[in-house]
Length: 220
Image (cartoon, rainbow, N blue to C red):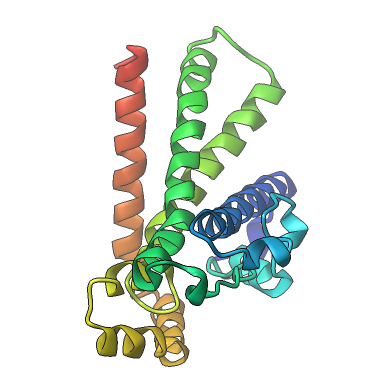
């Protein structure tokens, strides 16, 4: 939640950049996966690009900055272009969260050695301080996006991934329920009903990434 009484312009800019980068990679990955599976809709819509202007929804970005949850422009997909619509739709949906987890791993691989040397006095300087802050925010942001989008509630990506195992009549019922379930999801987010669970999961995954990468570098 945005705090007007403790506003820090530097933190705001870092968070804004992290959100724009994370959402752009997420949506690009949806489009790329769909394209690789035979659907050219994203290509024709100009979504096979990392240009944030192609992916960012101004209102969704504002909500994410102020309220802590928001959205990007959805990548349009034509399931009829897929060889196996249910399976390929699930793979296309999963590509978004997967890209966020992979991005978090890459950022962790960069963050851990720099932070280790920075806080042990080997490296110094304001540039490195803000770089570490940016990487730290990016790691948390991407893990949060990855976990949140895997919740099996329409219209989140997880609903398409898990619904792929359902029989057709249930599959289409789940997918078409997004208008109702989206309202329910907003209520859960607005009331904070998901906050503790999601926060715990995010912290666990962040700690796991740091622990694994720290051991990889021999710091722990």
